Image (cartoon, rainbow, N blue to C red):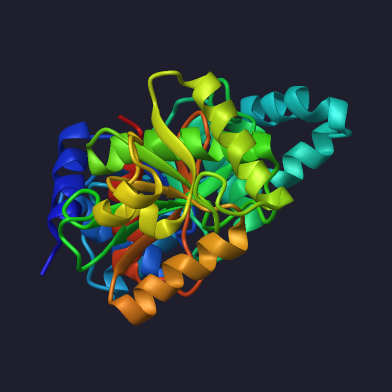
Length: 332
């Protein structure tokens, strides 16, 4: 059964009616995902590659992709302009026109260029290549959101505990990108995760900055980093409901919150959990998934000026389709 939060995301994606590029059309899972996205009206689909090959593969898979736009990234009329844009933006880093030309032969980078030039509203990639290509494409062509300097990732964790977060759903971050964030990066992650909570869960973010300490119950440099990051995030967004450092039980359980962090605007009510480093965040969402029976969507990239998302190389077609819907919602 589809969980209510996923149903809401899908409904909002349909209303948004955005254009999403799926660059890895040589992957049959991507074509199957494109068929699902089109059939369910999650978004308008743009595929990159040779149109004759894509049509032939679609016929073999018995897919109706007649509603998709196909762009051959090797012969596209905008290709020269994208090469020039990339060269101008990266020449201070040693990029040459020849380098730019070669890089844009890669469909994931061409898809990123299309997002950056507002030809499409977002991109989903990664089924056929490493995460670093998706992130580099995003950095080169889209860049970070205003006021943010950190690309990170969040996961939507759909638990079996309905009173938590939004009908049991919470945002976990960072779950995929920054191994050992500085206080400044952790503050960026918190602000980006708050935006993700509002966009994807549709509720006011209540952000807990997690640690093994609650309000001075223990001390270490890692605790101080969380305290500093909380202050920086508050300075960035003064209206944001955020508190830290908090232990997980203080963040989520009202009884514990009353004992450990009485008066906190967050403790006992958090719907957005910020982990002190990637080890904690990655382990936490997989523990909840494997031992607690939660469903996890993501990691989803955060902190970008426009939505680009990465999927695992082990993903299924339905995973790509759902991330396309999420990307459409982020593009709103």
